[in-house]
Image 1 (cartoon, rainbow, N blue to C red):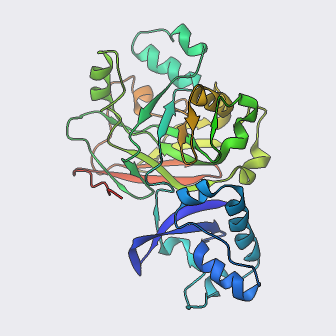
Image 2 (image 1 turned 90 degrees about the vertical axis):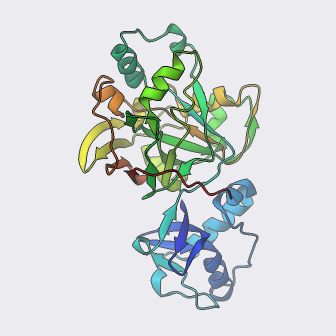
Image 3 (image 1 turned 90 degrees about the horizontal axis):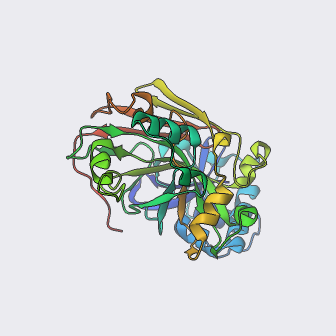
Length: 338
């Protein structure tokens, strides 16, 4: 399944829960109404949001799968629910929002060795020995989430804006002290993550011994959709929660970064084990991988720039997970309180 949160032109302020099938977005609530009449599938509880669906657990997930399976082979764009609402909409006719606009938490790790080595070398440092002892992460702002095609406000205090090419998983089942070998049971799906970074702010605040904080606080992009593990099973590696997926970043159409998810040093199994130690991970929690090798300007320019500027278009592409595109703009952030 490829889950999305989207808006239609006729209801620009009412987010809908959907799934991508072929080149169409299936409105799952309309699909429920259609399936009740056309296929005699009994209607079941279907939350309004993707976070609600994740929290609903396996019975809700199985019901959503049943609805999509019932649509296989149908003319998605021609189907109508009882109220004449379209079951399927052309993908290019809807506005995709972040799959999760307000996740409960966002933890971002530092798990690709090549990135860590290069970033430290640019500062004239060796990789700390502790990095090889356990995976480390920081918490970022779950209320500054942007989606595909959203404009990213250029932070007022920075002159060194950077992107970071990452993959993230979203927790589906709550758990504490999760062993790496069981971690995949707790993953609902995967998405692309752009950990936007103000490098000059980050550099200064981390000299104090804390952070990153304000250097990362202003924006994180997720999307375009949330892909469940069954869509990736033929790309699975021997590492828990890791897949053989190419990762690319482009600025204004020019490729700048290229890596592969399988190059990660710590598996998502190990990341989840670390994140859940002595605490509880909840459905909807986001776990970021950290930057893939070559996956940011900090690496590519030895920390000297040139950096991103207003007007630049950043595209992150991960095989099977789609393309996450954003334009940098010179304006203040407008974050929805809901």
